[in-house]
Image 1 (cartoon, helix red, strand yellow):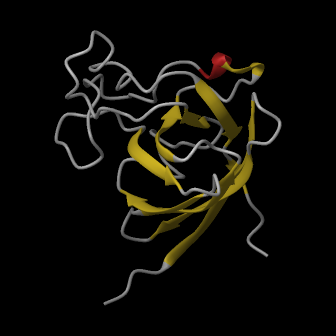
Image 2: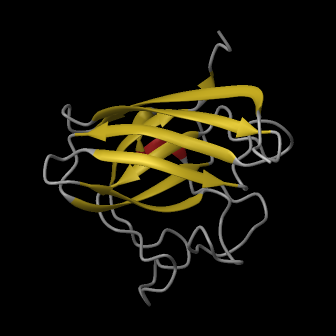
Image 3: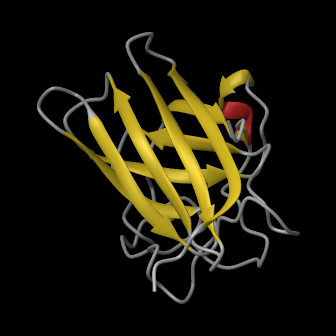
Length: 161
């Protein structure tokens, strides 16, 4: 049986510290609680980039004011499939040689409704790969050692029309 949409949709327009980083993402929550994230982000360096939901929808100081990873259950950083992870840990996205990353993922821990909703928070793209908490670096268990925040956008409700 195929899950249907709850009617809740959100969007994030991604902009970056480098004016060439641009994109948009759509978030759609199914009735079974899974949120689908789809979109494109252009202007990235080719390769892996850490991809997370951050706690704050504040971009007054660019992507640096979006706070830490969204972590309502106070866990260590990890892979999206790990038992121990921040709710906002979405792993890595991959930019091709053209600098474009196609985003298409599903996750149970980023709902658009309820006490742990991601609405009003920010999605952030990092300069470097996320080591998924396994890198042994001092930042592995908090940020995945994913480096600078090169692009971000606030997650907001989208019209159902």
